[in-house]
Length: 554
Image (cartoon, rainbow, N blue to C red):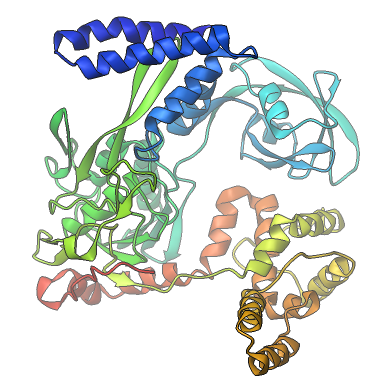
């Protein structure tokens, strides 16, 4: 494949004959210029050049001024793309991460080959197929662990809890990363389903989750959690909406240069009347916005949370030959009210990669029941909730690995313990242990307040405002954001982060989700609304609905 880039360009030049038939002289001319340029660089540049690299750079240049979703996918990137779209791959079933000189198992999936052979979070990968893995990167280890289903790989691990080394033979399987990682109950009669992405088969997972809940008890109301769901396959979104609305209902129509296509529900609904609340936030995008926005437009669900991301563009892949593909935007989608929620206009093809839709161009639409909704920038929830902010200090401790390192030690001391997923929390004594653990650790953290004061001080110095500089010095002296103070200020957040990591090790991802729901105010707000059916219905009645705010949130 060394000359694949050159051959691709030759194929493109041959294809220009078709364009010439359409009198597209400009395209044919530019393709000829491109192939001539590549030939000159390949034969005349002072140093030898890689034609594949030239092709990739040329392709990147072609789409640079388009939208960020249009890109060239060379052969080596297609496996990753297929995994993202399908949620499936051949391997042993675990997340991994770098820790020191080795890579460790960061999260074996429940009932995966890694899990069934006794591998646990924190176990170190010492060797693979007899070859030392010391110094290997995540990518190197991942490449060796992945492979065709039914093949085997020998992994030597040093177990975290016992410090014993063991060589295990793992049989690779087709690993399916769940798009619906959790379904459970918030209150009697109030179900909850978390949907994390729109990979192939997520409709079946969603249907299975609903049937599971209905098999366990009466489902009087359902919370669908689409927060932080970045979307995926459009057709899966249409089928999921079909679980809640009548067969034949229009969910979305796409419009592009190839024309218009309408997508309608194809099956009888599973829950045609059960009250729904959908949770969204600023990271709810694409197919997730199709589900949320359609249910809002059809007055089928109440949306709670924050304004969604605003991705109303549709992508498709086109083969280019030699296992290379072009992923390109082919159109915009429009949900049942007729609005497109795309937040960024990329039509100018400028260096800024798009501009926000101006407030003056935002248009009003109506839901099926007559409520006002707006286009031009994501989906505004029916009831806005303030987002929960995690302190940067707690995030810093986690990203530096201090939380995980402490939990490693905690698990060694409590290896035989069992926990109640819903109520578990470390004790005050445990947190005192954490403070001692952190005593000698350096935390490169600076609060936003201190950064702001530094910037003000520099500005005051530049403007020669001596008195103001003195007042800023006084404020800096009063500001307490040292490590020890922050460990107390953000104690609750740090404790909850530690709790989540411990629960994950006992009860996998589903257990951690169940544990975290108890302290989630947005889930609580959704449950309270569903427990009050008249209040839920009132939100959906046009005469009592407060118009959505078309203004963009900061």
